[in-house]
Image (cartoon, rainbow, N blue to C red; front, side, top):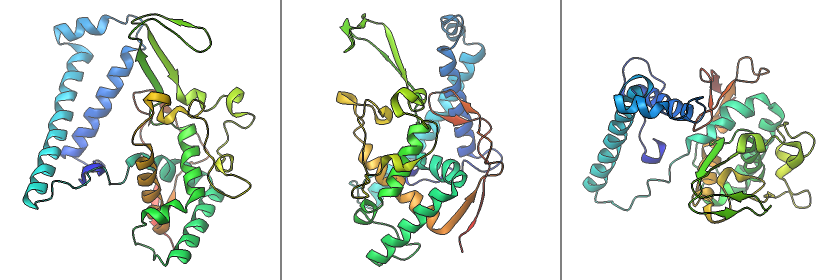
Length: 291
């Protein structure tokens, strides 16, 4: 919703459209994911044909999602027409995915949060920015540690934990493995980000320093095949750099002004396997102004 500058009011109570949308979206994502985990993988096709059970609920949920999304698109187009500005970049808004750092990772690692705050203070001193002012592109480029912290959170908590594809024709993988036409293939980015054989000892430890170049203090990226959160090769995400700009912008804006506390932060939250990574029951936090 942030991409369209619309407050969906998803955290409200009652029957607000945004609340219904989020419930429907989560329900649809869960039911679709369950198709790949079912002992009888084709049973969902029978339910869909008869319009019963989970597939009936999925159809109803998709209708709710489409209705809400269509309404936002129509509202945005009408606004653009009324202001004679059809060229506004709808994707220049903040990316909601960055909250996995603000609301999940940073509060559990105060030393990391302190380093981010120190970096923000340093950037403001160098650029003359005041707290509350929006950081521009040049200021965001100076935030190397914040970039590293976001990347490290994406390594441990990739927004899309499992990527599933279908082979369009017979092929052979670089290691010699044959993959036939119409075969299903998948890789688990969540598991891959925690493998000692890939990331070494301490692979399950949140450590933004692994992304910092010790010689100049700048950000040091990794081979995208090692860190496939944004895919790799011909399937590399075209919006990767824009996503980083959006994530850094909103994390900086939040941590500049607020302190985020996670009750029971020593406990690891239960992660739900779905199309997108989610925390079971949501994540409860306390937020108060930074002094």
